[in-house]
Each structure stands twice: as structure tokens, then as C-alpha cells.
Image (cartoon, rainbow, N blue to C red; front, side):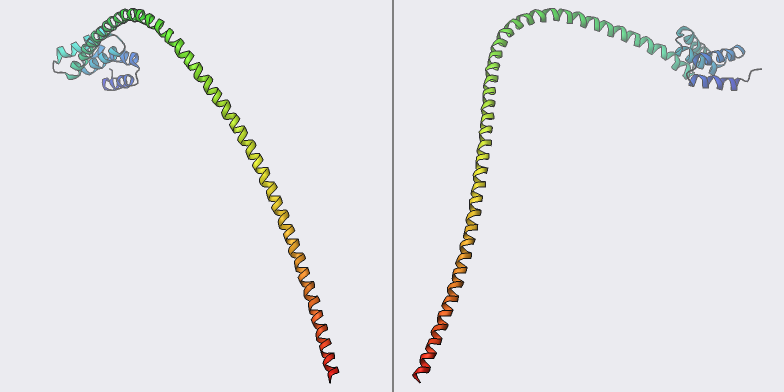
Length: 217
């Protein structure tokens, strides 16, 4: 005798693990002994739906509703097929819309291409004019760039010349400072010599004055 609860739990775990074929085989074994078991029928209907066995899956849910019209899970299972049918209609309508859109797009493409060819001819003429204008502008910009390069070169030369002049001026100032120091040094020596000479002369004069004074007595 099969342990229904244990086998059903194994089938439920297999279905949760997405092992639908194994779960379906296990549920069919349960239904061989318990053909009216609602839980097993509902789970088998779901498993067969995911396996793509739509007619068999639908029959499982309908069998449950035959015995239990108020069974919510079976009713919800049948809604899979209603939604699937609605999606098929939606896809069909969507594909039809795409076909119409593509047809209109092809027609518009032909019309646009004809207009584009006319525009291209006009654009080619305008493009030639714009190309010449762009070329002239590029030549002018190139000339300006060359002038700027020349100005930069001249400025570099001027800077070098100014740097050289400033360096020469600094050297001259250094020479003048040195000469000035030498002159100050010579002037100091001359003043000191003059002072010594003057001091000696004063001393001699004082001595001469003393001698004259002594003679007068």
C-alpha cells in the first residue's frame, strides 16, 4: 500500500525543483490508486502545463471542477489556458500590427527615397558651396596659425634679448658697485693719510711754539 502523503510530498518537492517529468510520473502512480485525489490531480495539471501537455493539463483541472465546482486552485489552473489564449490573440494582433506597420513603412520608404534623391541632388550643390567656404575658412585659420607661431617665435627672441640686456646691465651695475667701493676705500685711505699728516704738522707747530716761548724767557 502506497504512503500517499509521503509520495505526494516527494512529487511536490520534485515540482518545486523544476523536475516536472519525475514529478508527473510520481503523481500518476498516486492517481492509479487514488484517481479522485484532488490535490494530486491539481498538481499534475500544473506539472503537465509546464511540460507543454496543454490538453491533458486542462482535463485534470476540469476533472477536479466536476467533483468540486468551488475548487479555487482548479479554477485558477483553467485560467492559465484563458490567459494563454488571450496572449495568443494578443501576439496575433501584435504581429498583424507589425505587418501593417512594415507595409506602411515600405510605402513611406519608397516615397521618402524619391524625395531624398531630389534632396540629395540639391544638397550636393549646396555641399559643394559649403565645401569651398569651409576650405577657404580652413586656409585662413591655417594662415592665422602660422602668424601666431611667428609672433610666438618673435616674442621668444625678444625675451631672450631682454634677458641678455638685463644680465649685461646687472654686470655693469656690479662693476660700478665694485669701482665705487674701491673709490670709497681710496678716499678713506687718503683721508686717513691726510689726517695723520695734519696731526703731525700740528704737533710740529706746537713744538715750535713751545721752543719760541722758552727762548722768549
